[in-house]
Image (cartoon, rainbow, N blue to C red):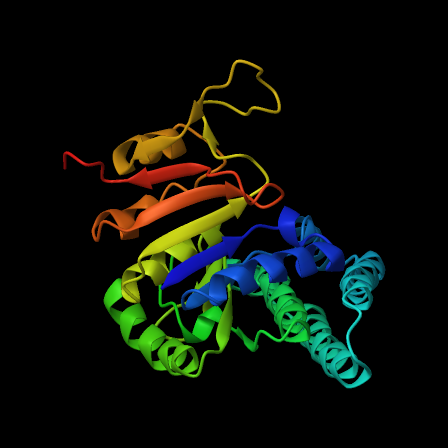
Amino acid sequence: MKIMKFGGSSLGTGKRMLHVAEIIKKFSNKSEVVIVVSAMNGVTDKLISLFQKCKSRDFSTAFEEIRILHGIHNSALRDLGLRKNDYVHIKKSLYHLFGDLSIYLFLCKDYSLSDYDYVISFGEKLCSHLLSAALNKIDVIAKPIDASSVIVANNMFGNARALLADTKIKAKKSLLPLLLKHIVPVVTGFYAATKEGKIVTLGRGGSDYSATILSNVLDAKEVILWKEVDGVFSTDPKKDDQAKFYSELLYSEALALAERGAKVLHSEAMKPVKSKGIIVWVKNIFKPDLIGTKIWKGVSQ
């Protein structure tokens, strides 16, 4: 089994989603795969802005921002080129999600940290429906899965940590039956649910963490984190021509880079894989044939 996570840049348009779907299809022909998705590029920031506008009671601007967000996702849906019945089905799903978001925002009383986490989780929810539709279009049976039914975390809103024992029970119950039927689960990244059922986010970049959590509880062979860079570098290669590329890293080295602020990895993402020796690959979605960076325990450990 492989867990594959796709970031917002690789899911920024409907055409990019179709490209991602073809990559998933190649892997799913050889092994069982579980997909973890981020929100479409820029959507989480727009949801944060939307929340802040509502909190300050600027509802007219908030309404316009919801309209823009709706347009972004409808544009991606049109680009998928779905059959009419499939198009209508996904359009209804998006409509209901935006309805839920709007009602929650405009009727919210406190705009607390809990409310904030709930609102900014919608980017992943919307994206999971679109990518599932892209996969179904190319005859890969897929189903969007809300991470709140799979990953259990503590109640540290904004920066929660997974409770692996509780997550293992839920993940096996919700995901294994799908895999046995050769259905590809498309799980929302970035957030989980507390034991009480409250949505709680895992910190920015938390979809990487979502993927490694699932690899731990499902005993996956490896995790592939698809990014828009060739792998892990010592510094941002877009800003530093002298940035060093790492073809291999030990878990401890990758963790040290993340803790020093390397944006390519979430600071918690190495912990669930290190305990079970699961290999992590960081690969470029736009250059899928490049080998990328391998993160593992090394041959001598």
